[in-house]
Length: 113
Image (cartoon, rainbow, N blue to C red; front, side):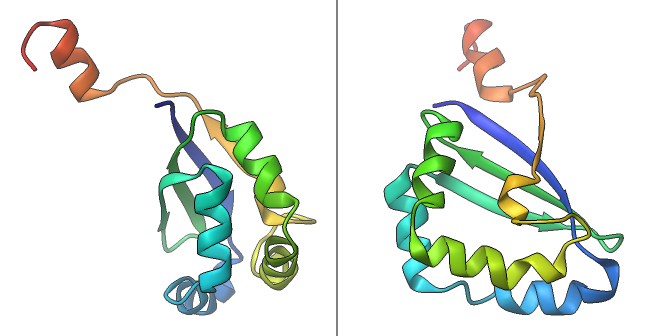
């Protein structure tokens, strides 16, 4: 399954609030993400506001479009927009970072899996 790294920017003055809301993401949104095709989705937050996301999906563009069609995602994005330094819905401002190394894949290719 393809893997994706995503980078965004949270307002450094709102880090505590960002952490609090992500400690208890709405159950309806969790289900919508899962049903849209997001897998192994994790977020990591640095003290400078850099948020790094990791996700797996058969097709992240499709999974993102599917979750974007849900009312719960629209509500979540509206609620989160003020926490980010970017304009608009935070899930539309992700920067994708290309993968250059994956341990298990290279081990398998080297016959060491």
